[in-house]
Length: 123
Ligand SMILES: [Cu+2]
Image 1 (cartoon, rainbow, N blue to C red):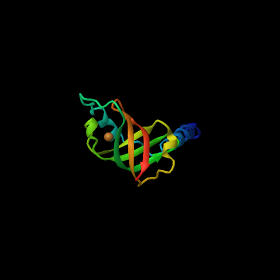
Image 2 (cartoon, helix red, strand yellow):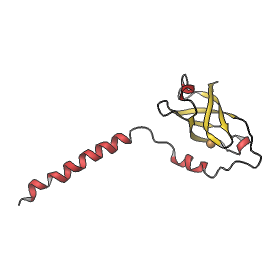
Image 3 (cartoon, protein in one colour):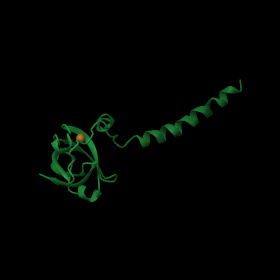
Image 4 (cartoon, protein in one colour):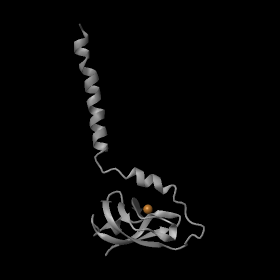
């Protein structure tokens, strides 16, 4: 009979962690499927040494995190097919003036740091 009062405590204990988890999940999650695929994308034997440029459409921007998701064209220099994926920016300031839906040209840092964008420009 004393259990009636005790029953409330486990409920209270659950509410706070759930609220915290909910808040942590509110920013849009990166695309795990597309990101996982990148591991299989080995650079070709003849790796270009300089920057690699391509075109794409912006699908998401997180200016605070300095990340941008692009639906990009195939990038022959590094044997990439066209895909949707998230990049990080070397300098998040380059995202200023870029918006979701923009058609952009962009520059990857190099063949070994292909997920780092050093420049992006609206077309
Ligand atoms: Cu890609």
